[in-house]
Image 1: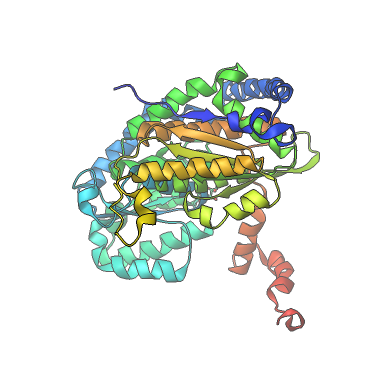
Image 2: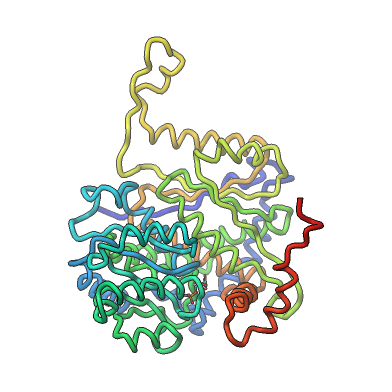
Length: 472
Ligand code: PA5
């Protein structure tokens, strides 16, 4: 069966639909195309120069083969897989799992692809209450648990601390061989703290490819191992991305969905709509809105442009979920400031459907629902919300999925990664760094007493001291 393609639908940002004040006119589209065309060329050039190695991940068999080999080795004796990581080392794992495995996957083994698929937990925080509860439940089952610690640097305080807790527990409960038997580290090929530890402790490793930043790494071993172990077809995931690669590399603006997406987002950012709301009408896709938030925020939120000038740019990504947030956010979205661009994620066919039951005689007002499918209701609500937003001249994009499969999810990931690259070129900023994340990381080192950060600790002290005058 031919695999379905995802599509970006953009009629509902046009002036034809929402008028000249908030919609994009034909002339403006021509301007967007003219300005985005060089940005497409620029990102294609960056790729040729080897500056964006994430672009080639779907075309590289080596990572997939390594992941499949390690997955096969560890799957036999693993009822629970635990990912330790944060940011780009966690969000892709979570999003792929939510999208491609059933909602009850962890609780109901019969909903897993096969008996070798483990439960999956991804810890991307250091909340003692959350992690402590998990430790209590796992401590007697360590011999059936595999830990995938993902950290390119190995110095990230959250991941390092989780790792140290688990390491101690494994050594205490299972002895010296436990690190080798129960851990997989996904880290830099040659350098860094985690590489050093893994080599010294004979922990099996997978590689975070050189030059691939965390938020662009889901199609590398960072995101592929948990997916493969949990029964997701990673070959199809990569194939979807590779096929999207052909579409988003097209130099002609009108044929390139990433260019159109980036151009429209950039246009609205510059015209009073700096907020970008991603609203999946699919629970399975909800964590992709989270993944997108990091991708968009860390890549595009920059103070300097490439010439060193101060620009302080960056659209604010917001996640919402249909229909849940209709009952939480839509009042604001319709009557609040017209400062947002909406991107819906729509699914034609879900992996199953549910038929709504009959209404009782005493509630004939519910009869209109009886016998209808939940797919029809969910998709009607998407359309209804879009209609209501358009009524108030709010621009709306939709990414249309025929079905949610590894192939279409791979396309989606790649579409938004390249959209981000093209948007970065339009904003004329460095899309691939995140210098502003550093100060908070260093302040944590200082507060936790890491040698070398004493001066910073002194500067933080006034912030840490509570001034009672201001506390009520
Ligand atoms: O996208 C990024 O680069 C970050 O979110 C990193 O993935 C995150 O800070 C974790 O870094 P590391 O993999 O070094 O632990």
